[in-house]
Image (tube, rainbow, N blue to C red; front, side, top):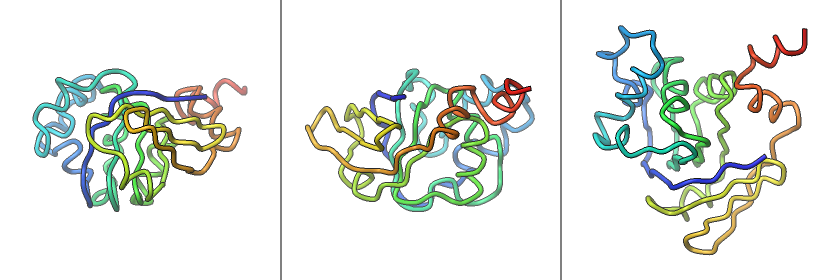
Length: 162
């Protein structure tokens, strides 16, 4: 299983309240939420992100509130994977639950820039920066997590096993 796309790059402590600001939480429509993704730190993100694109960030991505809408908002916008030095624990859980793969890899987070084209192989954990020709080694995804991602999240995976 792989992801490949262009990179949007962010710094430390990207808060879930920034990923989807509270003023847009009155909508239950994932597309509506996605249209406002990252608006306070990157007003062009929602208009530029394409299916398959990736986010690369520094430390503590998804910190702040336990806003479960944040990973769903990014996945719906088209983000196929997020790579960061570290993630907030609750964001990590929420992302996996909805089938959005995330990888902690400090070397990749520091070595990948905005606009780079990156390929991630979830079987091996290899992260290949096609723009610079560099490779990083992240954690491979266990088979059960790949099944959750492929199913579109934990609920879909659980329902498919019944």
